[in-house]
Image 1 (cartoon, one colour):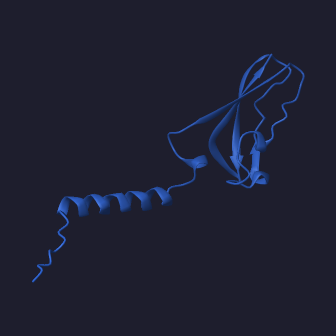
Image 2 (cartoon, helix red, strand yellow; image 1 turned 30 degrees about the vertical axis):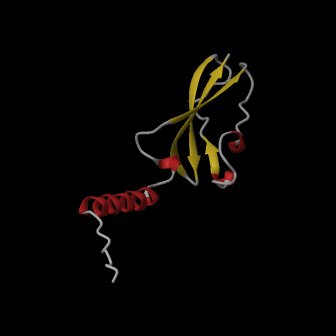
Image 3 (spheres, one colour; image 1 turned 90 degrees about the vertical axis):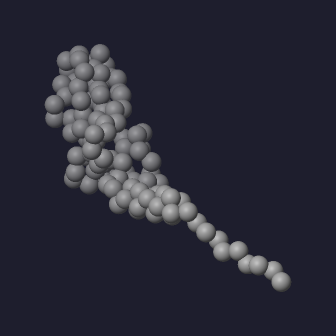
Length: 106
């Protein structure tokens, strides 16, 4: 006669699996990468004085992940006539993202 052994899973293992499931669910409920707090993504562009920056969302973001037509760039604080560094906020669907473009005017 064969004895059947019960499968016993330690409480620690069950707790660890439950914690991993909760973390996975929590990470999926967090806002997208563009809106995560305490994270800033910087892209860099350089132009000559007098040129206008040609900013295209396709140069920075994936068409598979985002609707590229929803991106806009706030160039109101850039003086493309004066050499220097300027920060251009990136907006997505009317909301400011955690991304900026650091524009260097030479």
